[in-house]
Length: 504
Image (cartoon, rainbow, N blue to C red; front, side):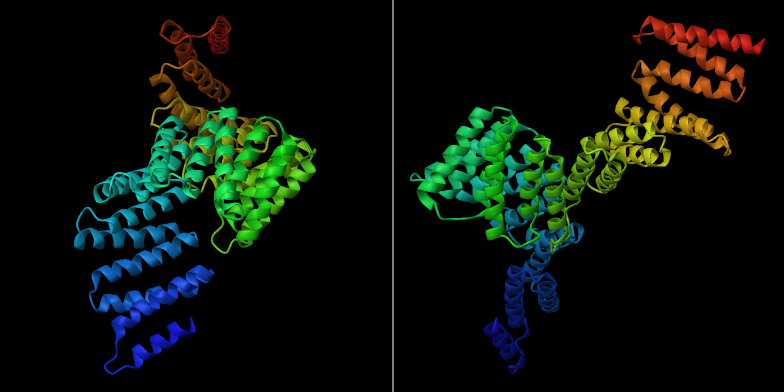
């Protein structure tokens, strides 16, 4: 660093001043600071270099600075800022370089990894595929960089649970690597590990272990003394399989080994350490040792808090939820629910996925059963927002959450009669009507339930004529394509009869 600083001073003090050349030194200093984890200082140097380069209209070097800045933003969790910089850099490269160029492919891959970190898997896959298309035109068919891109795509497909497609990409990558390195290589061990993980996800645990053992044997034969993140991942995968096989002692052994290696090679606060601690906690949870499980989830949460970059909301949410589950099993349901509510709030802020909505619905149902209506509403609103982003406008799963929200207002009105309850009736009816639109279009059996619900509301406010319309509509629905049982038909008939009696 001292020599870089001396070089920079000489360039700035030269006659004439060599300002453009100094930007390259600033960029190198920025990279060193980046490696050291001094991200704010690294950003300052890269931004200084960018300012100089823009003055000289040196477009490709401007693109390089934007890329450097984007990579640091990625590391500190400022993903939108990172994307802005990298996409601006990409535009410059596409303007001044041939369309088929490795530098363009490289930046496409970097953008893809950011989308992956944001859990925006479709966008990530799109950019990885664009990168692969370019690389395949630039390089020989059996080049290591092509194998690397195939691995990237396989990883995203794995996250999307498209295991057969992912397996195809991993096998293609493996074949390329075996041709390049016939005597074995760490990258081959990585591919074997990836394939093993696919079989783990497909629940073929015997085949998964077979590939993990091949990967471990290659490592030990060639690089037995190397501790690196790939070894942590491989040890973790062994632990995951043994957990599924209910061999808890073996699972713990591998997860503890993974934790020990990660602590040797990685700084405190690194997300891999968080994941290792979480995996140990999960084993203890499955062993029903909820005290130890909670302790390790808590350690994982603490480690994530020490991360010098922005904490990952998904990891935080996962640990909060599991801590809540452990507390519930220990008999402290109230505190457990508070932890699980923290998880739901975090899930509402990340890239929407249906599994997060299901979790929110589950916790919302618990709160509704406990008559904690405001918390139930918060959960259901989070679920609704996620579903509206993930599903088509008329998906019945969206209607289910609309019904849940209507139910909360319906129950809230019954249990808070000392308040002005007319607002709750209006709100519950509003959400039931929204759900009814969707159920009717899908000819779903809940069409009948929803019509009856709305009828009850009108009956309670003594608008019997309107209530009768809804009850009759529910009864008439039995003559359509909607399937239902006789007991529900009897309920509808009783509703109509009761309203007619009240009107006389």
